[in-house]
Image (cartoon, rainbow, N blue to C red; front, side, top):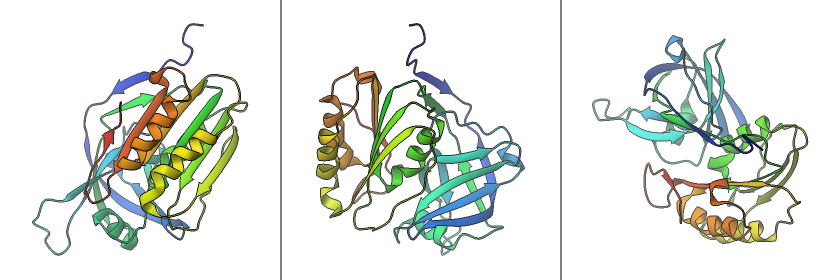
Length: 250
């Protein structure tokens, strides 16, 4: 069937924008939504559920220093209101979490991108979405775009954080919340993927989170069969490193 599961790559002109915090919303004890606004958001485009923008955080103790840069998922963009939602994990350290914890209406934040999108069609019968809490904004976007009749199997490892996060979807969603020592997250997630009882139908596999953990998850995806073009894994961060973001292949 022509067009079935057609994955598209879209490139955008790189645009740098200045935005202003409009409001914040605490979604859970460790998860915060920051809504950014401003006229420079006109024309912002994000077609892929796991797109990322680069945010620039100035050091208040040294304003002349180059800002720290971190990648974040555009959770929601309202073109009419020119508002962009970014969701932060408040893990208590690092320039992004530190900034988000004190973010208030009127504060400025610069951002760049996205530079492109990989658009995954919503016509897969089965969607397996795996990650830690840093993957939750992308997972939430995917769940929202899935139609009724689609199946979604979601596995999220919250490490030591005893919490769950809200989502909406027309799809049939089954979700597992895993908890435990952060160092063993990859083993937990891989084991949960291996134990999944999936229904028949074409399946799309996606994972994101700590890099070493995701390197454990991707082989578990491959072992389930199916074309490797229907498998996507990314390291959103890496234990002991700063500002990393990488695709995980073979």
